[in-house]
Image (cartoon, rainbow over all chains, first blue to last red; front, side, top):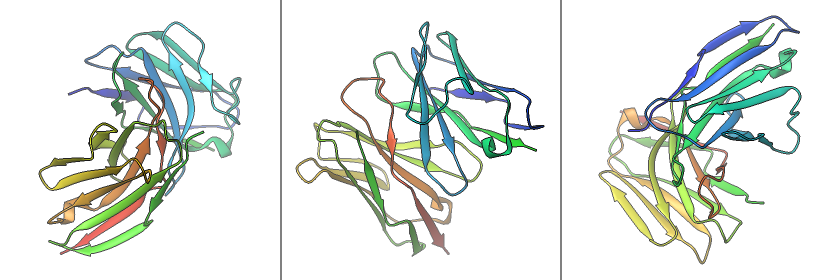
Length: 115
Length: 113
């Protein structure tokens, strides 16, 4: 089956620092990847859609200068949380789709804690 | 845009009973409806999905039904087991492949033995 990995699984950082999260499709090429954010006991909220070779499309209310997304290859997308603050603490999850498919395969998530 | 409502928010059943979770969507153009199971601290796992050209799909103890006219779809789990305990999310997406999913708020299913 399609496997999506994320790294790191957990990260703790100090307020004001930047954190990079990687999302990789291990056994397929993903032209589109998605980044979601999930607060405790809440649903997944779409942050942005990442297309290989082009700029990401951000959802309303998501600051593109704070959440930098790069999709440099067909198997890798990165999310960088810049100048992190405690309110950025959350569970960040990526997903990827086949080029012509509907199914989305999710990564295991990254728990970010900003002190 | 699309809006997905999910009910109930919590569901407790006895082992062996059936569980039903219902979702409604607002965009009549949506045509892909997956269900995900999420265990604590993990990413969502696709358990079953249905496209708008069929009304029902079954995979062992899990089934999904879709009523396009009423714009609602349901997840049915039969013969529930304690390991079915998790949070279940429904979602919908528009016709274009690669379009993001819009999720319901989730249902916490607890199966007691």
